[in-house]
Length: 149
Ligand SMILES: [Zn+2]
Image (cartoon, rainbow, N blue to C red; front, side, top):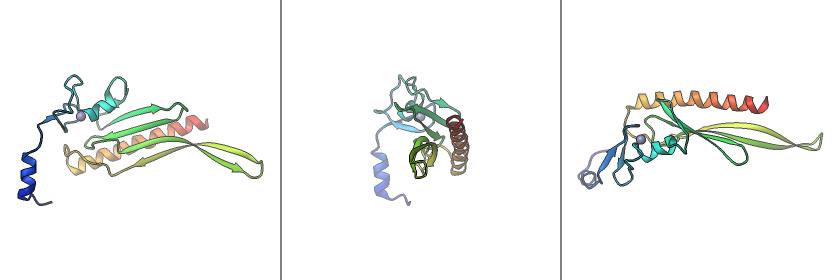
């Protein structure tokens, strides 16, 4: 996009921002909690309650719902948020021969383009995405193996 005079004026009017020491992205000063020592996006993964892990190339947070189904969010470095998800679910189908409801565990890996935070160049960002995808696929295989014995 071309940097028009109108855009330049908007940039100048922006609120003061703080650079996060963990991910390197900036956050509005009013949203940044110095006690956490990181931006709110990193805090979503890495706070003690979140129990997430920073693997360097990506952050991952795994939650277990009340029904026991697990859900992982993965945020590759260079992305704002959880761009890749691994989600357990139960597929229910009807077997017409046995006339029984059949349940099977499935694990879905999904991803979005996500928004990049501008801290890395595009190739590094893409590389981190693929590393995160590798991890997501591995996690999905492990979960599926655990469920299907
Ligand atoms: Zn951060």
